[in-house]
Image (cartoon, rainbow, N blue to C red):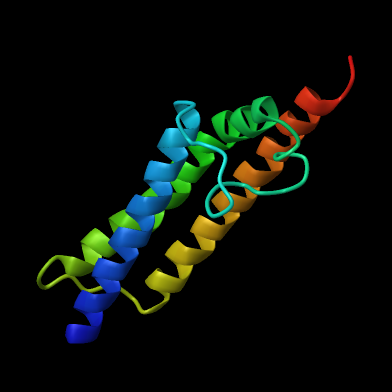
Length: 116
């Protein structure tokens, strides 16, 4: 029982953090940082590239955070019975959404960086 509570709390917090970062990026309020964000050469080439990357990736990151957040909340509901693979599935979906967001964001950064 304690394991389920800890798992639910951890998942909800991780999901919330990722969703907030995605929301900040989408709102153009995620400052360039050495610690957070999509930090690849194309995205760090300029402030405009950084911003465009996170505007494009933001909705995907919000979705990536929503999946583990909701799963964590569902785990915390008393009496809820979920299969053990649910946690793994939620994290796998989160990773897929993060990768899709990062790929689309880097494409947007490359478009900003390319000479027109």
